[in-house]
Image 1 (cartoon, rainbow, N blue to C red):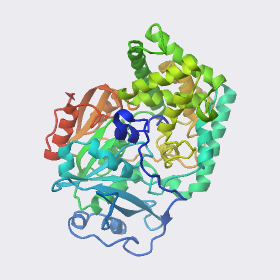
Image 2 (spheres, rainbow, N blue to C red):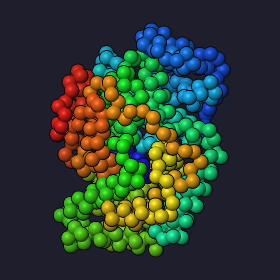
Image 3 (cartoon, helix red, strand yellow):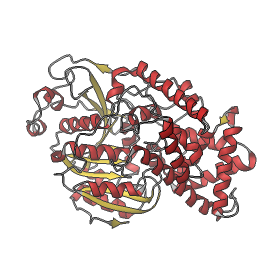
Image 4 (cartoon, rainbow, N blue to C red):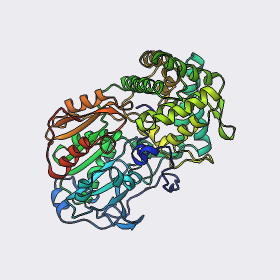
Length: 522
């Protein structure tokens, strides 16, 4: 997936003040925390008994120790509870190394009717961070009824977060821009190869096992440790792919599932890049139309004229970066992120107006740099809150990939530039992010239709730039139990981020099991 489709936690958490710092303390990340088994019960905690052990008698004998764990919850951060479970590094070879998966729970406001596992997407974003914000996002009926559980997927956050580069090297990589020329693409591939080699050296075997299917299997172990016969789940963006993968692997254990800002797993990886570029181009066009109607808009003329002015800005900074605060340079890659980040939510459009005005009129890149920093979780001192960006690359590169040659990469880049004439020239270098990755993508050997589940609610927003509406339509069609709910509006993510209609539909489904009519529009 594109490197511009992952920043979802900040959008959900901060509302109209998205660019503000989330205020969460950043954990310290060392090399991957992988351990060897120390006992027959998996080396951590007690064996769980009762409902989950009874429900999982069909689990193979060599996996039962992972399914019969008891979570040792302890109070943390006031009203929350923290814990962890242990899972095998390689589910196909569970007798070797293990990884610890961090969990954080917001207990139900009233008597819980069960647990609701949640994921904010990315890939690479922290679910334990996300759960600290759900009181401002989720409907009260859902918060009353469920213990809401956030988890950090393997390779992210507190679950062996992936760090390949130091903050300084990662910052430098994010600033790199490569022209769409033969020599520029050579430089892009060399940069990707260098990062891949650093990841292999720093992370080791975990790097081969941070794929979506492994995380979905971890989710089943979490389900069992929670004492649930079925998994109730709500996932946004990449989290929707985790949910649909879980349903496909464990259709009989899928409970009430909501897949928001959904991803169609059948979309070709090259087409995914093209679709996302086109999605942000469409969102930018909507923004320009809005801007031209506001006083103080730095753009002028028609919508096409405004788009051309933004394209000129991106072209200019590729040749001569603008200077921002602390004499930092606004390169083309940072300018691209500074422009697209506010397109995730209509509430941020005024921020984009301010940033473009500063860049176009004053030749100052400070606000676009601030937007980019917010997206990348970069602090003023150059440090980063966590390693979500690095984990994003590592996880994405284990998803199905297009075999890239220079000719194929050029073909994809040409398609991107046709789909996104304003943003495309800055976007195309993303094509090479997984070039020469040291581990092969994981093949999908399961039925993506997830036959045998109950109804699964799939939500798509018509103006979502990061996960285009067509993907939600596709997922609802391919899932045997897919129920499509459409939000007619802008932005990435609908539940808790759009209107009372979406909120009510989801809460009614999660709390009382009321299945919305397929094709419901809000």
